[in-house]
Figure 1 (cartoon, one colour):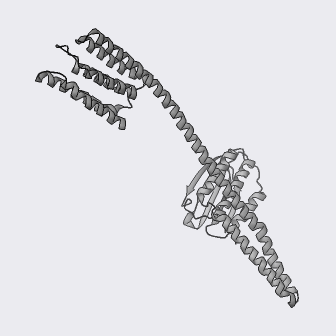
Figure 2 (cartoon, one colour):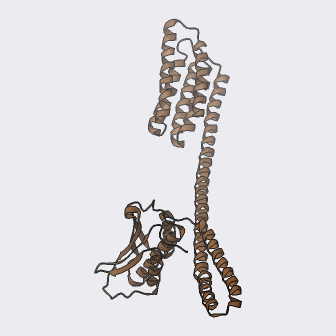
Figure 3 (cartoon, rainbow, N blue to C red):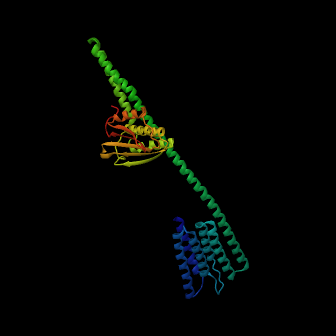
Length: 379
């Protein structure tokens, strides 16, 4: 848009001087004013058809013809030097706006009009030759500019494509790194809870049983051991909560993990999200448990089905439970026996008031499960 105003400024500066250069009577002035008016009408139409080169080259060539007709030295042979500036502006605009082949047409029209005007004028042969040389050099300079500009635009386009791909790879790397970090946090939290937490709980129970059996002189010492073990258990729970505090929960986090699994396993997954599943307030642990259940279901799909696609549906009907279903087409009717993986996932879901169900029809293998939102946890 800034360059458009430059074109306007150049034309507005040159045209008044070109009209005032002549000493003519009122009729001739009226004809030349009409020519200038027609020139600017076409000039203001040009930006509207900038993306249509066929129309644009016609308009610019018409403006070159209008300029020559308007400023042509008719009977007196008086050459108007401002026609050189106006046609130079038109040629430059053509090479700037149009592809190379089209800009040659505008440049040829302007140069031909200038040469005809010069030949019809009363200029000396030497001056006519100089103006002819100027026209040729102008066309050559514009051709060189156009080729340089095309090369520069091509390099810039390639640079922008490479820059976009680099930014996309960088975002993907950061995203995958964050997902891996979140998975690691949740995994560490589970390991601490399942190993250290359970062992400390068992130690507390054994200390209590031991305290009931021993004599009173050692009970106070055992009680201090019990308090120390209880404090350790509380510290463990706080550490687990701290690890999970920055974990990204909710369905968006689950979908990111599943998309990553989809790329790694080469399975085509179709998602269906219903009934407020996106806004369900899942914690990081709940999200991780659902993801693991989906992962285990997809693993079973790869084991028991030749199909490399699956449909996953998420929904949170009523906002009280979060439900998921994984299904895929099957081609055989072999008997299915539930393995350790799905049994373990069922136990995980039961900690959140949920359940897991696996069944097989003649056409589909289906894994469905649910958890209660806001239920259970590591406590």
